[in-house]
Length: 323
Image 1 (cartoon, rainbow, N blue to C red):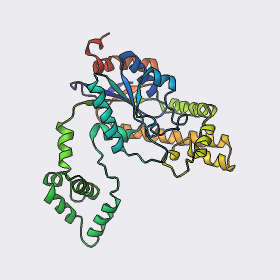
Image 2 (spheres, rainbow, N blue to C red):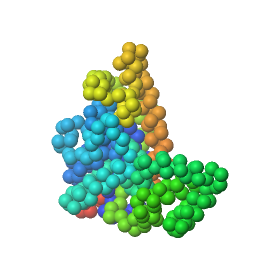
Image 3 (cartoon, one colour):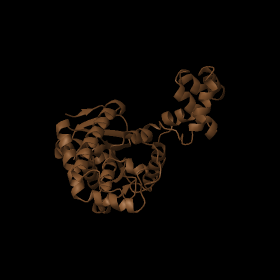
Image 4 (cartoon, rainbow, N blue to C red):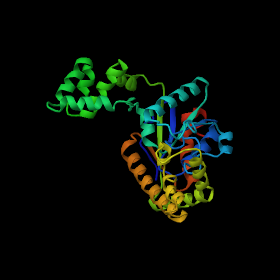
C-alpha cells in the first residue's frame, strides 16, 4: 500500500529515498539516477568511512562510475562525524549542484542525518559538554529558571519559544548564542523563511518477515563477499575497536572471531540479529519522525518504481511527469 502524505503544492523538491536497511533504497535511487540523469547523495552514517565497504553495502565501483555518488568515503575510521557535519556538507553539495544545473536525490537510512539536513534541527554542539556541566553546577542550588532568564536577556524570542523547564533546549540555545555570537532565533528564521530548496521524503516499507529474510540473506552475502578479510585488513591498518567506524553492525561482531573466542557462523548469527534490531528501530523512527513523507511499499521493487516514477518526474522534470 502507498500512502502519500506529502505536500503536493511544494515545488523544486529534492526527493529523498529513505527507509530501513535492505528495503531497496539503493536500487530505486539508481533507477531514478539513470532515468532522470541525477546524482545520488548518500544519507548513511557508516558509508562515510573509508575502507568500510562490504559491511556498509556501499555502491560498487561500477555503480559509482555509472552515476556520481556523494557523501561516501569522506572520512577516516578514527574520525567523529556529527549530524550537523552531515547537514553542512550535504547542503554545500546541493548548492553546488543547483548552481551547475544538476539534479540530486538523497538515499539512505540514517534518519537523524536527514532530519538535520531537512529541518536544520541540529546545532553544532561539539565541545559543549563542559558548558553543559557548568550550567548544571549553576542550578544545583537553585532552579533552571535562572538559565531561562539569562536566555531571555540575550534572545527574547528563543526564551518565548522554549519552556523554562525544558533544560536541554535552554542550555543548547545559550550555548549557540555564546559560541556563535548569534541568537538561536536566527536559526528559527532561516529554517522558516530562508530555504532555497525543499525535500520530498519517500519512506520505503516492507513487511517485517520479508524484510528480515532480506537482511538474513544479505548478511550471508556480505560474509561470502569477504567481510572478514576486509575487517582483518582494517585491523592491520591500525583500526581499533575504539574507532567510531568499528561500532558498525557487521564489524563489531568480528572481534571475537579474530580473538578465537567465537567462529564465523556465530558472528553471522549475531550480525543478523543486530541488523534486524537496527531495522526495527529505523522503522519506528521513520514512522514517528518523518513528517510529510510519502510511504511506498517496496516488497516488489518494480511495482514501487512504477509508483515512484511519476512523482520523481515532477521533482526532476515537469514535462516528463506524465510519460
